[in-house]
Length: 125
Image (cartoon, rainbow, N blue to C red):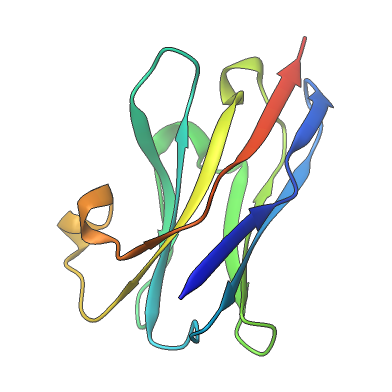
């Protein structure tokens, strides 16, 4: 499975972007999809994830601003980002996992099997 993340760019504070993660060579059905990010000089961190049978999970600092969703027919996942802040500046990565996943493991990047190449989001103040 190959993932291609795109949709990043330069946006002003308070603006919005929608990131996309297109999967090829496999289906999103039955998978857990996660979004992670790495800000300059920082470690990679979990942002959001969704998987079958559960509600999406968000890290606290994006709750109410970001929404994760997917279109299985298009084999594409999305991260809608609203009310962007300068601290949201980072390279954003999508990741995919097949099989069961404990809620406690949803934020662990080691639990994902496939990764996109990342897309840069820059929020200017």
